[in-house]
Structures are given as C-alpha cells and as structure tokens.
Image (cartoon, rainbow, N blue to C red; front, side, top):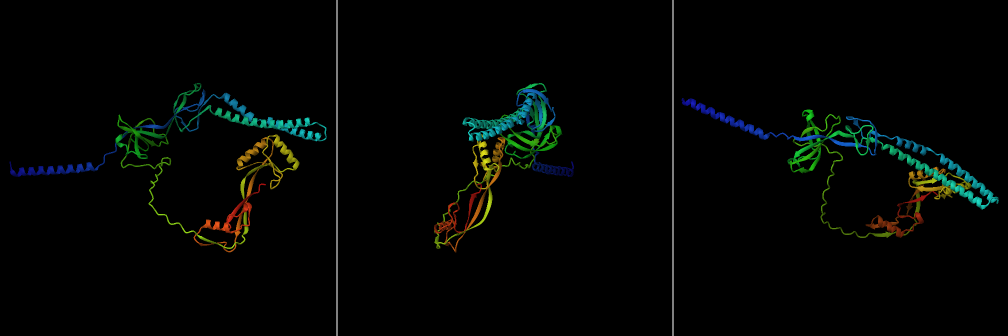
Length: 471
C-alpha cells in the first residue's frame, strides 16, 4: 500500500471524529438549555352545581313547565301541584279581609249609645230618670266601644289569615333555586310526590374542572393560578381556567391530590361531564383575586417598645385671679331643632274636649293628657314618640277606633349664650391649660345665671341650653 494514501485515510478519519464530537456537544448543549414541556394531567369537566328540585309539600303534580335541556333562571316556576282548595281559601280570606261591615255597624251603635248617655244625663239632672237607668246607659256605651274595638281586631286577624293563605298557595309552586339547564326529569303530571325530586338542574356557567395531580406538585399549584384545559370534545383547543381549590389531603394509594379549576362557560358551548387534560404552563401565571377571596394582609407583630424615660412632670402653673367683676351675659342666637313626634287630637272647645276624653276612655284609650297651655293648648296628647313610624302607627290605631288624630313634629330651642367678662378675669402667668383656667374661673367668678342656664365656663366660652316648647 502506498504510504501517502494511508496517511490521507488516517487524516480523514481523524477529522471525521472531531466533527462528530463537536456536533454531539452542540446537540447536548441544546438539550440542556431547552425546558421540558409542562406535563398534561387528567381531569374531568363537571357542572359547578347540581340540584334535585323538589316540592316543600306533598301532593299530585298538576303541571311541569320545563323539559330536559331547557334553560331556567333562579326563581323561575318549573312545576306546580294541584291547588284548588288553597286557591278557594285564598279568595275566602281576601274577601273577609276586605269586609268592613262589622266596623261600620259597631261604630253606628257606639254613636247611638253616646247620644243616649247625653239624653240620660240631661234627664237625670232634671230628676226624670233614676241613677240605675243612667248607669245602664253608660254601661251600654262602654260595651259598644269595646265591641267596636273587637270588630277592628277581627279585621286585623282577617288580614293575617289572608297573608297565611297566600303563603300556603305559594308552597304549591316549585321554583328553580339556581340558573342552569334541566338535565333530568323524574316526574310527570298526575304523579303523586312526597319527598321525591321532580327535576334535576345543573349549573353550567361556570364549570368546574376536577384535576388529579401528583403529590410532587403540591406546593407548586396555588390558588388563582392559571391553567390550560383541553377538553376531548374540542380537539385539544386550550381554554384558560383558574385554580379555586387545592385539596389539603392526598391519596396515599395513588400518590395524588385533587385540584379544582373554574372555567367560564357563558354560552354553554363546552359540555359538562367529559374528560379533559390540564397543564400548568411555566412560568406560572395568576388571575386577579376576586373580592371574596382577597386575603387581608396580616398586621406585623407588635414589637416591644424601647424603654423611654418619662419626662419630668411640669411645674404647676401659678394662676393669679383678678378682682371679681360682674359677668355680662349676651344671648347670641336661637335655633329650632327636632325633638321627636307627638300625636294630638284636633283643636276643640272645652265641652267637645270633655266628650272626646270620655269617648277615648270608653274605647280603652287611657294614656292621654289634656294640654292646658303652650302651643298645643286645647288639644289632647295621645303619646310622644322618637320616630315618625311609631307615631303614625299610633295614629292608625286611633283611626281604626274612629278617632281623628294628627302627628306633629316636636321642636326644642337651642340658645347660644356668650359671657362677656371685664378685662382679664383670669390671667395666666406660666404654664397651665384650659382646664386650669376653667377651674380658676369657677373659683373666682360669681356667675349671675342660676338654675338650668348656669354657665359652665365664665371666661367667654359658649354654653348651650335646651328648652322644650312642646307645652
């Protein structure tokens, strides 16, 4: 063999080995630098809620207004039980609540008995009738007043019976508690139900994705982390879902734990109950937390404050009190402010007011007060209240008894009083504060005002006094 050709072959082989080694190094570097793709985890698409809708009472099904596959809203009526008896009871209760014949009858009877009492009093004054007949007339008037009160109470009870009949009839209707789709129908019209469900409704917006993840991912998967979900019915098309639950317990047999994702599905285009695959892309991405899921930031632990020596107490202020001078009081302004509500009868003369008082007492209204003076003179007070609602309720009760009353706003007068002192009632030499000035003023001054309007501060500060003008 030619020695030149042998050397050429060796050189070619050597260069080929070097080139192969370089290529392997480059490929190895590329393999090390390339991140592995995220692992795909098995999952199942589930409805976020499944409810078996049933009736609260037993009975025979009259109508079912929806079928399988229909969309329903929360509060929508989906079925009804037979309710002929309940509807009849509702009409009867409504009629009784609207009748006022008994009230008008008792009111007319009371008016007659009151006129009879007046005639009997006049005849008794003339010694025409005996005291027994006068007492009998007064007793009949009191009985008539209580009979009127009984008629008003009966009408109130009738209104309560009406409300009860409406609620009984409402229980014969079956409503959907959630927004969703009817996925199953268990009963048909004519069947008798007790505790059995009539329909099954599933909420498909949002959907829940139940993911089975290996325990090695526990701690990496966190709440509000975004994941990609590929349902088998969509040919691997990814959808974005958010982690809402990470189970704190795992399965020792399989070495897995469960993760729940929330996937919006407003158009119901994604089926529930199908298999899917999920992956958590790297780097991890997070969705903004909802208001209900925001975690309050923990306050930092309280640290022990460093020891700081207390400053020495200030020297007591030396006050010099000037010679006492008279304090002149000047009333600056007055202002009317609300102070509750009062229920009053219309203004009346003395005889009319006396008859009205007797009629009120006969009707059982004893908490009354005749206003002798003030802005409400000549009227009868039937109670004072802090809120208008309670006062209006009192007026309504009196109206049912046949008495007219008004609700009047009570007011109080706030007076601002200014004390004008002479030159420097109190002079402060050094130190001191407002409290010390006030105490010195009280020790030094002779406030000319006494009683409820006594000045608290005689150094020119304002004092508010209140006076009720309700009479």
